Picture 1 (tube, helix red, strand yellow):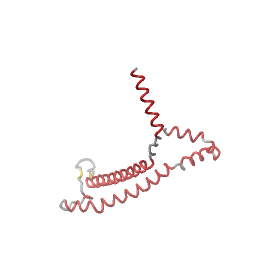
Picture 2 (cartoon, one colour; picture 1 turned 90 degrees about the vertical axis):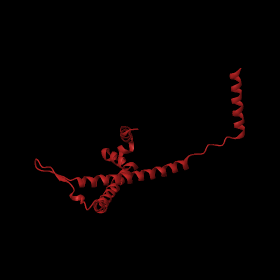
Picture 3 (tube, one colour; picture 1 turned 135 degrees about the vertical axis):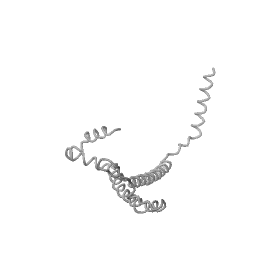
Picture 4 (cartoon, one colour; picture 1 turned 135 degrees about the horizontal axis):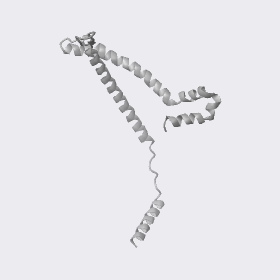
Length: 153
């Protein structure tokens, strides 16, 4: 079911038409759980990114610079000697790559955790096989034996 089918469902919904055109369609769209979950995820992701940026810039990079003989990553770069002499800030790029790797690792761990929770939940919800009464099992066995004998003859 793609987005097109969902739009058609919204258009065909008579309660949406009662509320009023585009506004009603928007209300139906926004009240779906997935949109609200996505919005919360984006807001939390933005806040989390600023935390990771601060961790890398203010804590990790000074420690890494100290280990690498006092390298200051804020000023690590070079100027190209031709044209308007642009400055290539390699240190900032390294900080951004480290921020990305930390963020990606955190998202990976979060997804693994959520998948583990969902897997446990599905296992708990899985219905057990119904127990077949003995008389039904016996009749099934007799039926199978008769079918086997008919094939042999």
